[in-house]
Image 1 (cartoon, protein in one colour):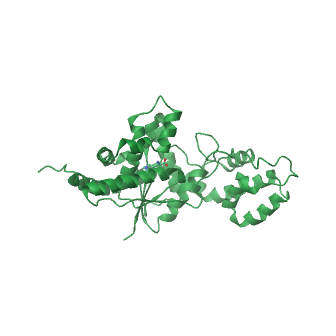
Image 2 (image 1 turned 180 degrees about the horizontal axis):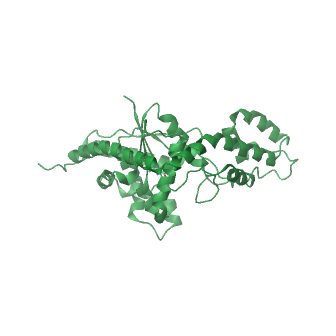
Image 3 (image 1 turned 90 degrees about the vertical axis):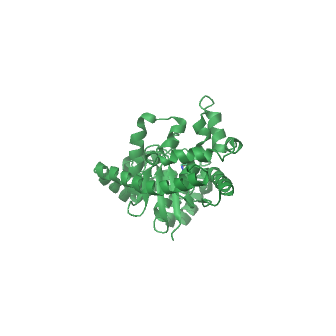
Length: 326
Ligand code: TRP
């Protein structure tokens, strides 16, 4: 039997190149080898109460990007987290086997608490419990994620072990699966590519927008003049080019060090490569966007299929936890 993959995408609106290289390409590739369940995690988005007025359009835009990137409803279950309300019940139940100390030590929690000391809500502390609930409600065994999610996955495994010890073998221990390109740096050359920092390129951007953004991106900070030797190892543009045009990486590395190519030309080539790579995705996205009823249908069908699995798991958990009346 095929192993089951589960992963969640936060609905922050249109996806960008960082999401694509770091996660979504992997999702697409896994579809043939595994039974995949992919979820747009709207409840997780509520833990920080950002952009709730745009939540529905953010979900829809993310869904369009996922489908355009190649998630295939014939192969995978694609659904929205809150459309399968069994998640809330499992979240409550797993909360009972999760020591608070574990949650307070999670690095992403500590970071969010430091940044927003006035908004440390109970849901935020429970974020990794909700994430664990996602995975185990569908008995996910393999979880494709970026590096930043590894502490959450470790916690999920601990919660699973504790549950299984207490109530008997129920859930498989989920394994993280990293991509070859787990962390994409943004156009500022410093931070992870993210929408909130504005250092990103949307998958759905036009070719012109893409080129404009690339041309203003930071390159090798140690290279001041066109005649200076470049340092591809510290240049984010080099990294992006070696991904989008891996065949040129060796020659580019040499040319950059010898100052045989300047940053402007290098960025032009990168923009052209990204636009060529994304052209089919962008075309598919436009086709899907013209058929909203079809897209909504995929989402509803995904929830229906996900719920069949969720109901089974929840019944088993309730039975094991002593919640089934005599
Ligand atoms: N926390 C993940 C992120 O920020 C999203 C997520 C929610 C997730 N539930 C999940 C990822 C379950 C993998 C499995 O990217």
